[in-house]
Image (cartoon, rainbow, N blue to C red; front, side, top):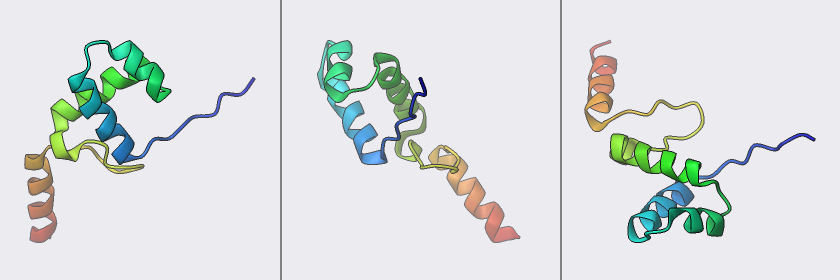
Length: 78
């Protein structure tokens, strides 16, 4: 049987992370959202590490705000 890879948009991920901060039982929340607990933990970790640069979309790099600024300045220098 072929598994279909589900894609979640940025808003869904951000809301899931916010909900997880207010809940004690993350496994239950993950079941309610229809995702695995491991996926929820991964999104939380990514959100803590990259902040507003989390969940950039398909094909885009995850960058911290400092990395984004460096990339912008490097493009400007070219």
